[in-house]
Length: 275
Ligand SMILES: [Zn+2]
Figure 1 (cartoon, protein in one colour):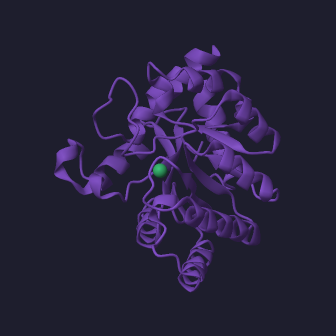
Figure 2 (tube, helix red, strand yellow):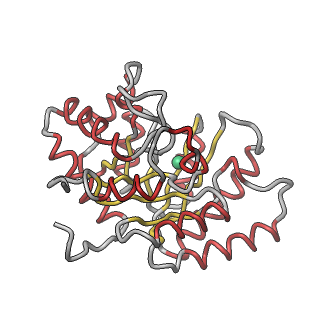
């Protein structure tokens, strides 16, 4: 039965090859998505990381009325060696994808300083170019920030007309406050359920509720008590429950507030059948 308080999963990768593997212990992806959309889940945003994955994120979103897509170049996927002509060609393809009715933003873009496969200066060229594209197309951005908080904040400050969300937020409560002051959103993942997540718990405690989103990052970042398994949107119930516990509010409130925030932030209209 469909929940009265269904959850909006703002960040997942259902087109990921892991979901096509029989080793996940999960049903086939279409069967899994049908179950999710008829039980606990209201909407899902499927996030691309390069041109092929963005195309497949859109193709999957076309199959479900409440699945949307975000398209962009992930920092770890930027082509090497850097070639400006190639970047402009790819940017033109993303620009065209952004006109698709199921595409609601540009991402995931940003900085990953944990891995050094792509030099930081090349990550920066792509991040900056995509922030300019977001401004041109007036779309929100989805930011990946791994061990790069200062550089991400500098990029955001350099593009004051762009709004976005920091996905699977891992910064401090103080940085979250600065982002919210700028009109940005904070998205919390299953990490908030982990025992050693002291800083993320502090963020969950203090972030203004109207700036809060939740996500799986499926197939990654599986919440407690399912760590070790392949993540999917159904496990978001644990993330919502943990945030409710931290805030001292009901699970229903966390589900309803984060769903309404996501609909508003990504400019998604409610369908007539959606209660
Ligand atoms: Zn992701």
